[in-house]
Length: 347
Image (cartoon, rainbow, N blue to C red; front, top):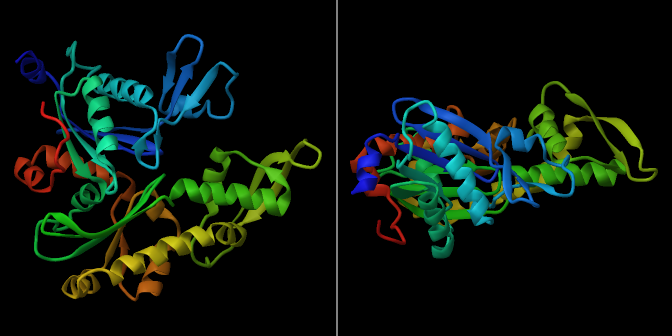
C-alpha cells in the first residue's frame, strides 16, 4: 500500500541492462541515461566511488585498492551487490530533479533469451532492492523488435539480430514470441578482444580494451571499403616494455575481427535453417533487421545479405532499440501483457 502511494510520485522506467552500457528510458521524456555499465569501488571501505562514464574513465588506471567493476557479463548479472547499487544510482539520478524522496517506479527490464531462472531472479531481486515497485521482464530481442517498430504480434515473421556488447541474439519472432532463436557469447567485446590479440601477435604490442574499442569504431569494417582508413595507436612494446606507436589500417582490423564476424553470419544461417518454411518466406520478403551497437560495424549488413541472399537493414538508431522498446511497453499495457516473460516471484 505504501509502495503504491510512493509510486504515484515516481517515474516509470524502461531499462536496457547491457554488458557494455545501461540505457534508461523515462515515460514522456525518452532516453535520459546512456552510460557504461561500470562501477568504481573502493575495496577498503566498500564505497561506490563512481558509476557509468566517470567509472569507465578509471578502467585500467586505478590503484590496487580501487576496482573498476563491470557487474554484467554476457548480459547477465555476475556481481549482484554492485548491479543493485548501479541500478539504485540510475533510479535516483532519474528522480533527482523531482521531489521524490523514496522512488518506487515500475520498471521494464530487457533480459537475454537464454537466461536461466536463477539469473532471471537475480535481475528481479537487484531491481527490487534498488527500489523498483513492480518489475516486468522482457526478452531483449522482443524489446529490440518493438523499439524498431516491427509487427511482433502479427502472424508474420520478423527476424532480428541484436548484436550487443556481450551477446548476439538471433531471433525469429511471430505472434508475440520467439519461434526459433540462438544466443552467442560473441559480440562487440569479442571484437575488441580480437583487435587486442591481433596487435599483440602481429606487432608485439599491448593495447588496452578502451583503445581497441576506439579502433573498432573508427576504422573497423566487415567488408572492403572504397577508401583505405588508418589510425595511429599507442601501447606498450612487449619486447622492451617501452611505449610505442604504430599505424593500423582497416584491412588489418578487418582481418582481426573476420573470424568472429563469420561466426555470427554462420549462426544466422543456422537459425534460418531451423525456421519453419512459411516464416522463412516472410523473412525473405521483409528482410533481416540488425539492432544493437554491433549493427553499426561498417558493411556488416552487406556481408550478411550476401551470405544469406536475404535483404538486411540496420534499424534506426540501433543502439537504443531495446531501451525504446521497453519504453513503448510502459505506455502499452496490452502489448506488455502479450510479450511479457513470466516472473519468478510475486510482488
